[in-house]
Length: 422
Ligand SMILES: Cc1cc2nc3c(=O)[nH]c(=O)nc-3n(C[C@H](O)[C@H](O)[C@H](O)COP(=O)(O)OP(=O)(O)OC[C@H]3O[C@@H](n4cnc5c(N)ncnc54)[C@H](O)[C@@H]3O)c2cc1C
Image (cartoon, rainbow, N blue to C red; front, side, top):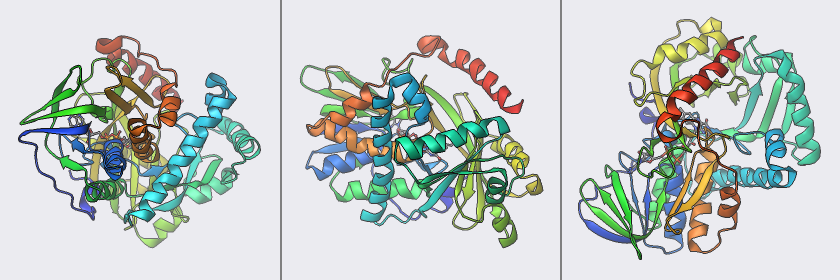
């Protein structure tokens, strides 16, 4: 089944296949937010940059996601302060804030029509989490001078979400949501206009690092480049073996219902905001511009995306909104995200800095991955400060390493998913 985003895309960006041997200063592998924004910023700096995408642009997570433009990192400030110290946690918060503003700046500057709207609520599915949410809001107000976030009590959250299954939680008006595919294609269009050369349907099969260049081999051609950027995220596969034990691909799924009537729309989402709940396997949802419920929930670790997505997502959707039982689903799709052990992004350089990698956003990449392109391009053109801060985030290998990480993680995740239901 086609995705709702594909059906409502408003930009065409068809690019040729690479069928010859070419040269570039920088070769980017992967045409999602990370790769496309790296291409944009490098092209703007006059760098001879070439991007290859194995499928169509934004055919990975960037064109399939929940569209939530979140702040901070995937882990909250309490976790970051505890594990990395208050100072480092505050620096990472600052980068997350910049990434949010950066997304809005790109949208404004390149006039990207992607239904950008403010607000994400984070409802709790268990009452015992509410005092922590309240404490978090106070902490962010007092210690981060961040006042876009407020606490909603049980009644307010139920009125805002139209679901009696939720208790209180936070509401962050500094966060936002958008049509993720049109946002990605808007960045692609800007990169092409700035002079980036882009090839679709041109998978990198391997690359070889030589003394003075890197040779990337594609299906029908090759690229000789000074530097390579790996921007493959959940689709990296075995392209760089030094990374595979640190990044685990995971499949996540979304459905779009039929267009809902005004009464239902008013009931389930009167503020037209996005929601991301407190479950370990998060339920996230919002309305599309044409008033469908876009509901994400359910994940698995199989190599291929499921061919039967509707039952996976209908189940949590009907738990949150029992009155939508049996609602017609018009679209269902999925994508691969890349998680890391600590759920924080994984930036690194490899092979004497000839290869740069920015991946592992762990499900929070709409703002962060598109900002990463700026961070990576700055590292290449000479100001590596932010890249180096990101690269200092501690990283661990998944238990089981390259070969067994998938089965052992699957067990761990099943355990936490079970806790969601208790
Ligand atoms: C269902 C889903 C919902 C999500 N919801 C949200 C959300 O609401 N908010 C949020 O912030 N984040 C969300 N995320 C995460 C977010 O989408 C990602 O973090 C972000 O898109 C990562 O961008 P990227 O460019 O790094 O990777 P991708 O967009 O996955 O792009 C990687 C690209 O690399 C290409 N590629 C891989 N290997 C090769 C190769 N060998 N040669 C050439 N090309 C290659 C792939 O085809 C792909 O297009 C979600 C993810 C999923 C899957």
